[in-house]
Length: 219
Image 1 (cartoon, helix red, strand yellow):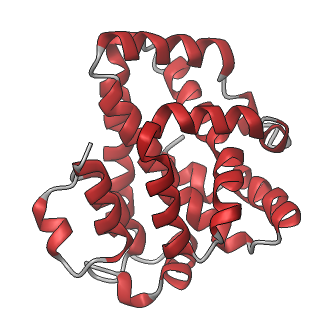
Image 2: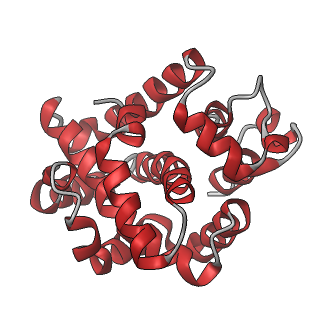
């Protein structure tokens, strides 16, 4: 399953429905947040996995706690919210509050709710990574390539889908003025994340993509 399939599939819709009921935030905003948070978390983990000790720790965590079952039982997302908070603490470290502030500003989700919602989404993202790890029979040494491949495939798929329900959601939540290349908000976001904060993406008119690029580039 590709990352785009995760974002547009039944799991994301079910988790978004739970979060909508719990926090009073629209489902579209939740899905848009997941569409931004997933590649961002994966990018941070890819960077961390360049360190052998971090890669081993991530590999152990995936084997122990993230077998992908959450993708078939979305009710786990709410039950594992506390665990999700710990995941975010580890992934973002000292940048967590900065990431939450920027995501809050750009999705319109209030700062007091952005953290708890992200904590619901984090186990879903980890479950997806864990399932991909199992299916590709990857160990600690191959995690960086696996995570890079997930992001690369998502970027390619976004470029070929100029119009999709997910793009429409992102466009409506983030605003048409945010788009940087041909009206495809998802492609802009993924491009900025995949670019690792390169200058070209950062210089083109701001928007959420540039913010994420700056965050990643500043690591």
